[in-house]
Length: 454
Ligand code: PLP
Image (cartoon, rainbow, N blue to C red; front, side, top):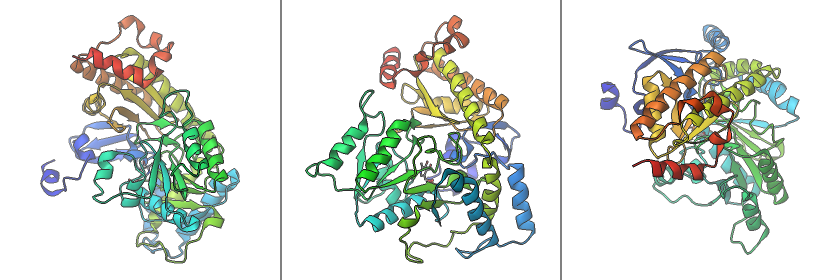
């Protein structure tokens, strides 16, 4: 790793968490230059939903390259872009009765968020944008202004204004609908909230700690924004493209957002690509008003078109949902064996979070897991949640193997932290019959290990 320490900026992160020099990758597995093999439950932070070097997508990419098709074209028309637009429309949008214009943004997720914020302000003539506590929308200035994390916001170096935070679903504890709070501000002209141009929301706050919004809450948010003439932006960058078991994470809630941000796995092959879906009547851009050099990655269009074959019927989505249920059950068993350390298991489809306490434990487990050949990252504003994010193509046996490695790592870290493990008689099968042990409220659980920890 010396070369990276010496020559690469201090800003690097993941190579610190996963200190190996990787060489090859296939499916759910990564290999390093020492020949060690790792199960990848991180999937490029959600950019590799179809696994590393997916053979179908690779074939398409190689054919494209060998055919000398256009690689770079700014936003000029190419056959690769046309094919993607037509396939995206026929495979994803039309069957859902959705109609969107597609804006190709700069290559990364934050570029899509920037475009959404700018367009929402232009269309409504308003400045304010509501976002939610613990939201993560990227680190460019506009995206940061709707991101919750204090240290990330501080890195902006300038004031981040014209945005208002509101509590996400569950943030005010059980039994309180946080949308009552938002609605009170929207309803009362004396409330001091500048009527927003838009509300931006993640249906599952992935970086924020795998916090899942309920379907009813999302539907009500859709109704509220419509009633007050506020645009609804769904940021589906991390949990879209099938992560929750259907192509859009808002399918289940039956939403039709005004603007949708997509990136990460939209190319399917880990190639940079981001887009903004715009309700046609909101497409108020003047030609070239929001432009950039890299808005036409044709290699990404080629693999993205191919990736859509996974969504031509609902069998792939069903397999994701089934594997998600298995992952949640197995994680529940692990959590039940360590009640002093595990606060809750939560997630949708193949994004599952295991919330741990005390602070620092999740990072320690991630390190111990890496030593056992499992790549898994911690998330949440205090890094308190382990986020299980395997490729959607992961095999059931790999899922089981990865969770076994995770359980071993947790055992080691819990032992190091001096936390008690429950007696062997209750683990893990017996514990799995008592799911409430693994799903109790995080607040209660965080107090327990603090007392157990000297
Ligand atoms: N939005 C969400 C929900 C994300 O999870 C991320 C990245 O993790 C982004 C936006 C920013 O994407 P990028 O890092 O590609 O700029």
